Image (cartoon, rainbow, N blue to C red):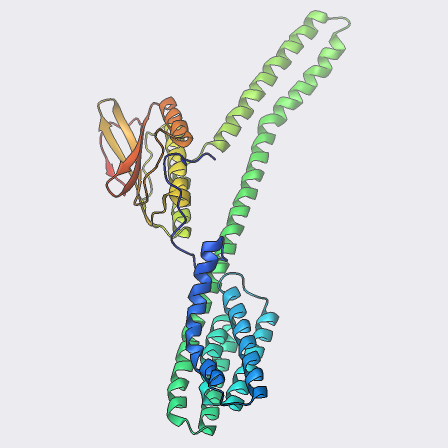
Length: 398
């Protein structure tokens, strides 16, 4: 599919979708910073190691244990944000954290109690809900008991509330991520099923179109073969009939394929909503379009215009808002259906129309319509008009 890349400046999408694995370096950096920034609260264990209050063996063991803890924590939480581990791997990594946190805190002092906060975050985000509901309070109880052993009852009580609250809050985040992943898979499955259904429907239609014609061609071919030696004039008539039937079959096949290739405006509007939402773009869409009196050629041309415009918004505009409007208008040249797509992204740097705009202009002109595209005050707008059979303005469907 061609895009209007010469008419707009390329830009990276501003939003990193929740529940999606990183698709480029920028998204990898964003997710890493979002998770890693909270490691600043490990300053207490690090300061405890640096202060030299422990022997050489204890310091080395503590540093090694802290490194393993942080590595496992980042691995578990980072993968859970887009491409989760299998359950057995989640339990294994969660178990490692569940062992390291109490061992380090109980042997090295109360400065290490903060590890239980990270333990609660990891368990809440990655564990299944049923397991997280008992694991989080259990981690809080263990932390509180270790704090009492160091006579840090006040600090342990405050951390207990934090561990339990942030753990259960992360169960909601984890559930959101899992739901997003399931929706993504379901959307892909629906698309695949729709494609399979379309293939089956095309196969049925081609069978219905060609079955009779091919049977008739076969029958007349056999008949012409038998007539050829004694009745060449009758055989010639059969051959002429075969040519007529085959030409009609070819016309039927072309019409059928053209119908399947022709995009529908209602379907494109639904796809536009999904595409813009997935790209993190706030979409303002029209209601169910009123296509009364709209020729198929006009509808197809507008559907192509919408597809091209939205593709460009998603891939190249860098905007975070897009408004799509569909309205019937009465012009001097007659009634038209007007489609406008406006976003708040950056304007183009090309000096002339790109391949995308040129192709859309030609397609709309073939249908008797027009195309206008260019920068506006706060972004870029494309307006496509195609003729209809309506005689009055029926208002906007936006």
